[in-house]
Length: 126
Image 1 (cartoon, helix red, strand yellow):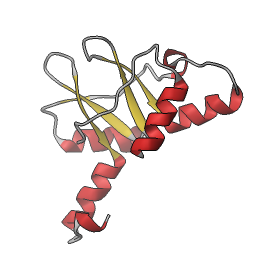
Image 2: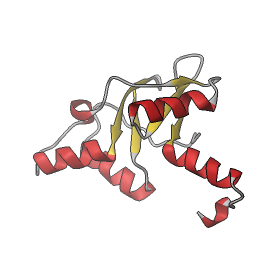
Image 3: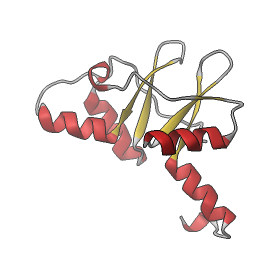
Image 4: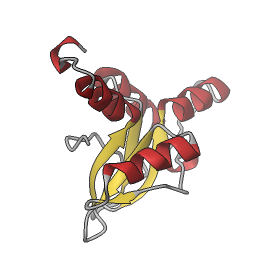
């Protein structure tokens, strides 16, 4: 699970999210409210689709974010996140704490890295 997350607010622009994704080499950004509660998710696919459709327009995150979210609690087994990713063909699952706040994000890459290490690989080479 990644805990050092880049997040957006619903009123941030898609251009800002696109910039952050490119700089950080990430594919998903959680959208949170003022209390750090998850309200949506934006993927690089969402952004590319909208930037292609509405060139030159100012697009706000809340217009394109996914609101129907799969999530796991902080004490859920990793298997539960993996199952959500596989069953729903999604790339990331937000991890939510006891107070409903965003704690982290589990991605496909996290599971591939774990499998690689379990198979005897060293993470320094990835």
